[in-house]
Image 1 (cartoon, rainbow, N blue to C red):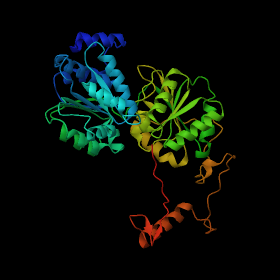
Image 2 (tube, rainbow, N blue to C red):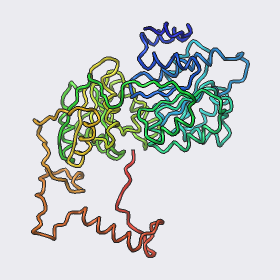
Image 3 (cartoon, rainbow, N blue to C red):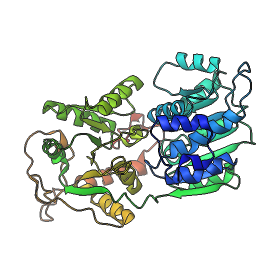
Image 4 (cartoon, one colour):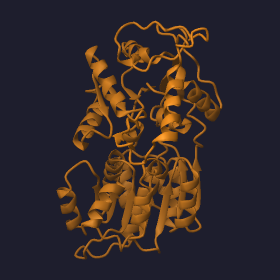
Length: 446
């Protein structure tokens, strides 16, 4: 099948040809006719399946066919909500490419940058808005955005918006647009709250499901290193001495972890940059641009910041930290091996992450091959809490013996302490008998 078989107008076909699009992907083949027919759509697809064009191409066609005279004031007729700035900007670039031979205008509304340019774009008029929920809410509150004329709504990466706490913002935004509209809903997974939302906002939708999340791409060569947490950086440094690793996207669990990995890689002469929520939008775009152009060899990212990163010919994905959600592993490694190319996914697993490995292998229904011949094999005991800050060679301590009751595990000490606090002086405001309570648990952020 070709795009010509999907009843796409000549202006879009010309743009697709210029962008070297030859044949539609499975999700495009199924979604484009349904959207052109005016149906609501529920798309279940993992990253790299081509879903952006699956909704962008028919939206451009529908709005072009309904476009008024050039002198008519432009109103927002399609809203595309995404969880991250990178994804919003990427979608905006794609829509501009697909619509280059039409008279439509699109604009990205994202946080992390000054809103002045976005205000000007809105004042000039835009047919399609691609936005992150937070910045859109801000501009709506300031009366810069009017959603009363929206005809087509797209919710992209809905499960990630749920993870990031945006669902309430999304629901608030939906109340500001007409109830009679076409809605396109995309989510890689379907947790209960997302399923409830689907039932509430979609009307008799066409369901398109491409590559279940549990089935990883067979082209991707997967392997795992069992290595103690304190030796992960050394293993990464050693791994990246291999010049065949042309470009590597490294995933860490936290923002601080990403910065630390970049710092250590830079020390040994490996070009690396980090991308996460604490970075400004300009810094994130700069890091992404350098990575795509090859100036930077290694991009270190958290899961949320990595949404929207679409890099052709990415040779390696490295899980510095294994994710605690198995579906996340599938999304991470799916960033390599795209467009029919092969890819390599390497994971590091410390003793505390062994349960995560088990969950991942259960989901993908296969065992990830273990690399055993490496200089930093897992010793088999948990490391001290502060061990990762040490640069000295670590010798694992023997297991604590029952014969010495003084050597109580730290977890037991914390458990006893927490129990004591909860029974005696816990206060939701963090006060204990007039004294500030010391927090022992820190929130992991991305």
